[in-house]
Image (cartoon, rainbow, N blue to C red; front, side, top):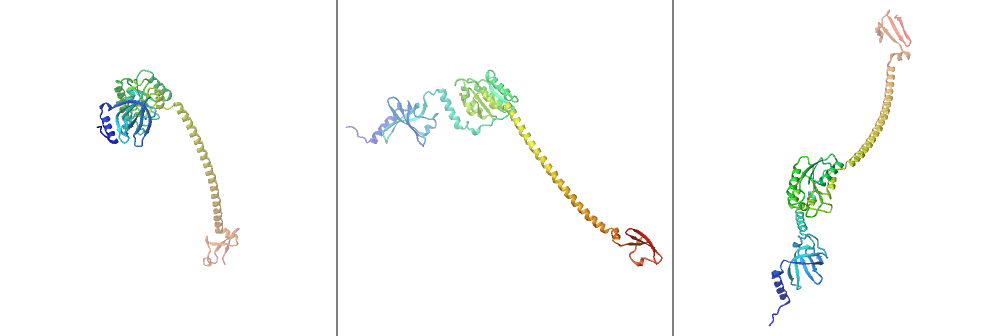
Length: 371
């Protein structure tokens, strides 16, 4: 007699059978993403489909944190997953642990994985970037001693700001054996007194040619340098992990030299403009001082004239007082002064009969004998 199951029991049996089958664990399934939903919890719900069928999928938040790209409907992907059953609905589905975009090469996959790792550590944070000096006197350059890169950098610096000196730390710029040379060159320039800025440069190439600039040890070396670094590796479309960790990224070595140096023509123009502003300001100040001095002179002249008038008035008053006290003024009013033996007579007791006295009046004097 056949065994009887409830719906839930049957779903549990199917779940146990599917999830215990070793050949259904960690399988890879290729397909196109559709019906994509990203839940607020961080889980992804979607379907994988091909020309003839589709399969429900779930990628829980913990697994989704390892994604190297943002899944989109229509993406062709390979999912590494386990078969599972959602018992309440009786649906079987893929529980996805890893999702890779189709066409992503192994080198690029490693690049994205390391980029994500270092990014999460904070090595690419803007807060740790150092400022690029405006007028560096000595610029260190790490690149191949031969080839167009070093010539372009030197020519650009000589044209823009010949006051800057270039100190080359030669190194290989391709292949695994280039990594220790690049690190040694960078560390040597970082310790070199006088070097204010370091350029890390090489020309363009394939991802394989530039792979040494994605080396984890080199990236960590750049992050530890005390002096600012401008990275100029490859062409404008080539971006390496060294570009992310550097304090500034230049699209080309020539552009790096331009970032590292001011344009002397622009500086001269700026100096001319500054001189004009200063001269105009000085002329304005001189005119202000001249007006101020003229006002002071005017005020001083007015003050002096006022003081002179006051002094004249005071002198006039004093003259009047002196004139009032002058004995001659008294004589002119009809009074006289009498003296005997050179002494002014103030009492009759001073005068004796027979003495000669002298009397002074306004227009002269005369003598008389006392009787």
